[in-house]
Each structure stands twice: as C-alpha cells, then as structure tokens.
Length: 186
Image (cartoon, rainbow, N blue to C red; front, top):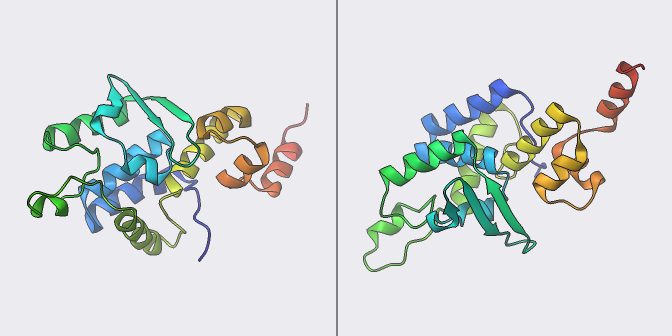
C-alpha cells in the first residue's frame, strides 16, 4: 500500500470535501474539513468529545504521544462544530457513529477509523491520489510550510521533534528544496 499524501493543490482540497459529501456523507466531509483545520491524528480527531471544546479551544492529550494539544479553533472549524452540535445536540462525540443509536442501551461510540479510511480511499481513487486519514494532517502541515517556509512552526503545530521527519511527512522533497535554493538569489 502506498503512503498517503498531502493534498498540495487547494482546488483539490475543496474537491475532496465536495466528493466526500456527494459520494459518502456530510459527516465524512465534515471530518475532512475539521481534520484539515485541527491537524490531529485520526484516532485523536475521532475521539474528540464536545466536552473537550471550551469556547474557541480544543484541549486534549494525544493518544500516541500523551502530549497536550491545545488548539485554538479557527472560524471554519468553529462553524462546522457548531453545525454538528445543533444537528445532533444529544451526541457526546463530535463524530459520533449513527449506527450505534440503533442498538438500544448501548454506549455511544465515535465513528470508526475504518469507515473514514474507506470513504477517503474511495474519493482518493476517483481523484487518482493516495488519500487517507493522515492526508488531513499532512495537508495542513504542507500548506502552512508553503505559506511561512518556517519548518519550526510546522513542527510545533504537528508536535514533531525532528525537522527531517516533518519535511518527509509533509512531502517536501530534496528537489523542492534544491529549487528554492536555485530560485532565490540574494
């Protein structure tokens, strides 16, 4: 299986959102759009509860690293979160499984990683890109780097500990770095 990629073209980022809603569900499109804006690993994104959100901040401990992630929510993320809360005021999880509601007396659960992976792979195949659940995090990192060219800032946002890891993670290749050196003459 090929490694998933950052979506480097902003029109394609929007197209992924559109196709997820049309081919799969509104919830899958919301996962994509909120995931792009939070840059969390999918396991952490799906585990977000409404109680983890305080005004305009999301505060959680990442499951993989146990690091504290305190994320200021931008307007797009806040609007989407508020839309979900208004539509499903009884939900505990931001991305709660609807199927679970059919099982009487069962505890609410978040949507499964498997369901999201399947939806993203379907749209990725249609667009001929390696799209997966990690693509949201990689895409956010890539576009922040393109905007700022500040790898330390991207590392901090992704909570990475090495520049090399971050560059590889967001898909910045040696050819792109060489091109930057070639094009920028001082």
